[in-house]
Length: 115
Image (tube, rainbow, N blue to C red; front, side, top):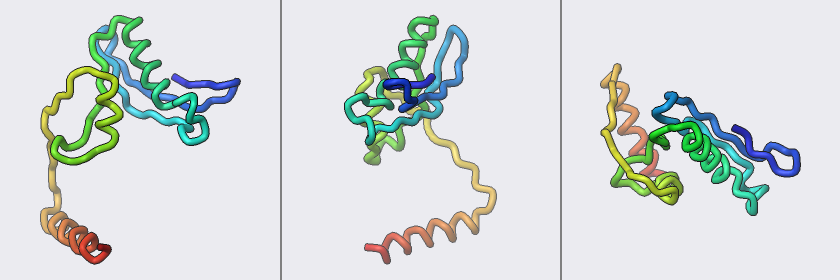
């Protein structure tokens, strides 16, 4: 779906569907800084929700709200639309444990040095 203002595309959303069941907010974009008064990202999300309602979708899935115990601005944005926040957990498969450990330590060191 595309969001237009005065003939110009200012936002859009890509939503895979499970017909009759769910619509998934997969990717959303908008020229929010340039069109502050039009709120293109919000309009794109509402357009998808409206489409889902008009086409018998039972669920609208925002596809994630971050880790529950960490601040995350996207979660704040998504929560303003109402609904129920669910967390089915996170899954991680580590194929190279030594490389993963090295990267984790390196990132911590980098963050410490940048303070």
